[in-house]
Image 1 (cartoon, protein in one colour):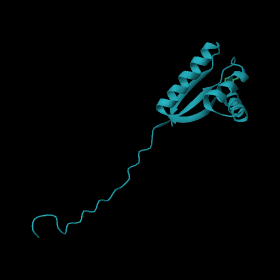
Image 2 (tube, protein in one colour):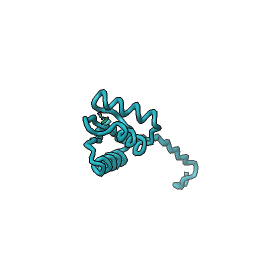
Image 3 (cartoon, protein in one colour):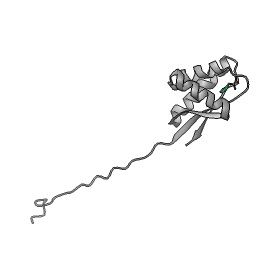
Image 4 (cartoon, protein in one colour):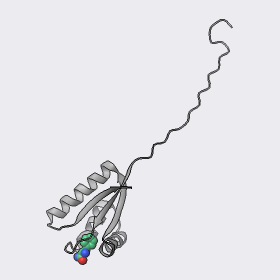
Length: 102
Ligand code: NFA
């Protein structure tokens, strides 16, 4: 060998490192005053559910006290919560929307 790289073979092994994103459930909480139709509207418009799915989610919250509207990254979940809470307040309904780490 002459001290150069003649005859040298470099083998690079690439191992993929995957990082699961931290996910958060966005939940609606039941109350005695928010109209069912308003909750369906919220689920349809902020969580992109069709009327049938939105109705199913609203009734789940109504009967069980809490229900999931979707699972998102921290930033998106926080935005959903803020949007729903602002919309409920604007319409003077006590509807509560929260996020929890999955
Ligand atoms: N419980 C409310 C009612 O009977 C409806 C509701 C459902 C409110 C889901 C909040 C969340 N009008």
